[in-house]
Image 1: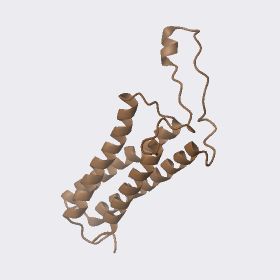
Image 2: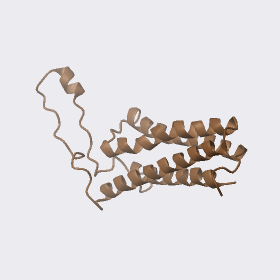
Image 3: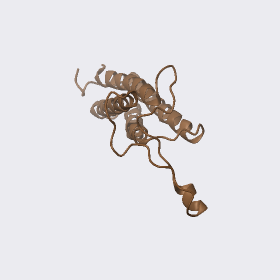
Image 4: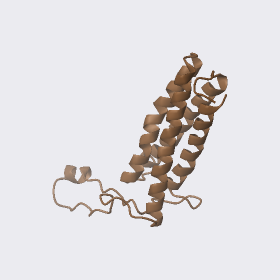
Amino acid sequence: MTLTAPTGRLHTLTAIFLTLAMTVTVGTALGFQHIGGFIPCKLCLEQRIPYYLGIPVVLLAAISGALRWTPVLTRGLLLVGGGLMLWGLWLGGYHAGVEWGWWAGPADCGVVAAPSNSGSLLDQLNAVVPPSCDEAAGRFLGLSFAGWNVIASALLAAIALRAAFRR
């Protein structure tokens, strides 16, 4: 299978699905942050980057497929989207390993001292204490947010890569 083989409706629909699935995934993380009150750590925020980059990439793949642009472009964009999700898989796996204590996290991702009561009220409001990367904010069905990101990234990567190389 080459990247120059013609693309069809399946490629377009897959790219649309990937766009929606990536949007829902990162939107869920943002919802937990802004509605649920879960403050993300440094590694949590880094795990969102592949989605922020991947959504426009697979959206462009959907447009490319719908407008019947060159198959190399459509397949190439799906391939890039799959690669971004593999990067997300790695980031999530790394973070989950830090949470489980399998390896150390970055030195700048630890617990910091809470802000003191000195200073103005505005200074205190602006002082946000980021959580430690080695403690999961919560576990759902035994997995942390990072663990669920591993599953989501793996599924999205598999779908994108399969579509990129499918006839």
